[in-house]
Length: 482
Image 1 (cartoon, rainbow, N blue to C red):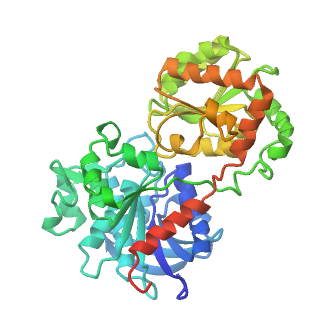
Image 2 (cartoon, rainbow, N blue to C red):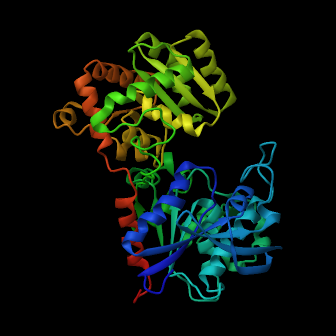
């Protein structure tokens, strides 16, 4: 933070392999700068992070961070001011951020992320020489304990914001870990981290943060209900006056069909015909027939939450109705098998690629006609924003951020020329098939379909509006005189 900025804050992030959080970590801080907000982003020193940073400066050392030594390194990276918690005992591991090489949770995940939170709280308390933030913004259960440690820190407490990206992941652990957190005995209480006799990291953050945000207005309303609150709806309801729904954005420089380096042919809303070469490339990759039938694509984790069981159940009918499917993703083994079996039944009409392929995900948005997102719940969702940006018409379930970002092509919206996609509900086979029928009907009139594409490409899916809302929230919470 510079002395001239209105206020600055440290943002504590788990830095997991999630595209939404990656956009929050990178694009949002850059967008905030135009509103006078300077940020430092704290993240764990995973091997990939340590490999990527150059010329770090040691800013703080811990001799005993919940039992391990650790160092705070500061580095500039691609325009971002990043603080890295270099703690090899916690983060230098061969598995993923949370899972060991066999796919099981690391048994010390509670300590690993409590350490991240404690480091953030110590920085907030002014332990890092020469700098103290004015506000702390944390994300998800992995960083939610930051505001808990801040609450019980002897130094004056700074305002804090907690963002829930997905309330289904809560960081719940047994009460036996409490002594390892080194909190005072009265912290084990219902107004703090105690949760039905155990410990809830996210629950503690919800109780102690000064403001709570979710990643879309609809999701903010949904988590107040038993269906979507995942057991925490009562806690959320008690804090409803501090709850804000602010939709995520995307990095419009990275996701730009006019400049994207991995697509075959660049295009804009006025040169949509150039998408045809990208469409040909997608068909070649997935082994689909080169004909005029619409290509419906899916880029997703193959899980129940994402509605992939409904896709597997309707794949045959989508083909019978005249559509083609291109599917990229991985997840539940049974769903992977069901989708691969569908592709085997319909060669040239269904193509499936199991795994993660970032360049292909860009090419699919640039070449496919529509993208299907049948999530049962979706706090924000970014895939539909990529679709809008690339003229790949989103077909989405009417939930969470999908509901907030896609304008359904009903009669009134089409007449007003504001429609950007197709919404459907419920997430059932009949619901999805009805949406596909609507899409096929619209696709048959290329003038109408082109209007849908162009209107979607005009949508503002960047971080600018959301950054302005965050900046206003920070200002309302910042200490007087900041």
